[in-house]
Length: 184
Image 1 (cartoon, rainbow, N blue to C red):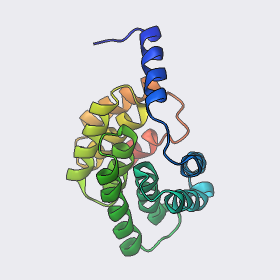
Image 2 (cartoon, one colour; image 1 turned 45 degrees about the vertical axis):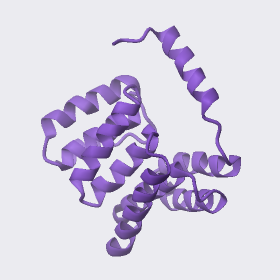
Image 3 (cartoon, rainbow, N blue to C red; image 1 turned 60 degrees about the horizontal axis):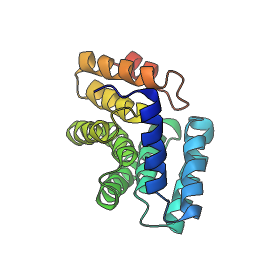
């Protein structure tokens, strides 16, 4: 069902009111890390530091673990991290994130992206689909499903999800839709 903008705005405000961060230090570090992550190789190392700091401040932050998992998996490409170590740690943090906060669309989206780059297409698609179910209007979740489907070999469906993602956020700071489409 299509939700009118004013109703969607009210829903988002209510969502924000319900979800108070348990630890503001961890939340601040996650937000700073997400900003740095959007700067790709220039910010990826800094993003990893912010996410590790967020976990140190609040080990129960599923979002911090999911963002770190994503950063570690991307770090193999952009930072030259050891694939064995980085991908193993990425999987551990993705699994931990899902255990800590399974009902969070962002947690599932970042974990899905980590699983995508770890080569686990089954888990990637599963968590990306869960992210979309939890946040059907969330560009990050839609993008994660496009990524997962691309690497799972379903480029046609991936293009559909990338197009949906672009509708909601045509200029996302962490937009990698074109890169992924061109890689496959």
